[in-house]
Image (cartoon, rainbow, N blue to C red; front, side, top):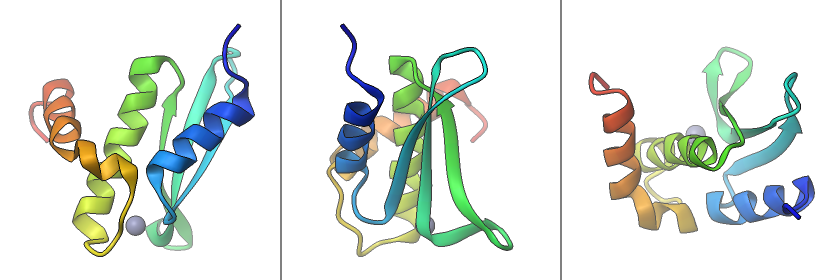
Length: 100
Ligand SMILES: [Zn+2]
């Protein structure tokens, strides 16, 4: 049995830290979609900075990786469990998208 949506949401929220607002939603294909919004930043005017990734285990990492990098670049005073894995997050993102 897989963890419930609420349990996944709590786990991701715990890793992402206080600046994040994590939600796990069901996408059009019935897969889980992780959304991590920043409580401080706007991506576009009036719209919170956010990253959205489908919820397969790798994609969950992708959302958390992008969030981890956002935290490290924009919120130098932030503390969150995910920052422990910043080096891996940067390496994974680079692997997926060599130009970034
Ligand atoms: Zn931010």
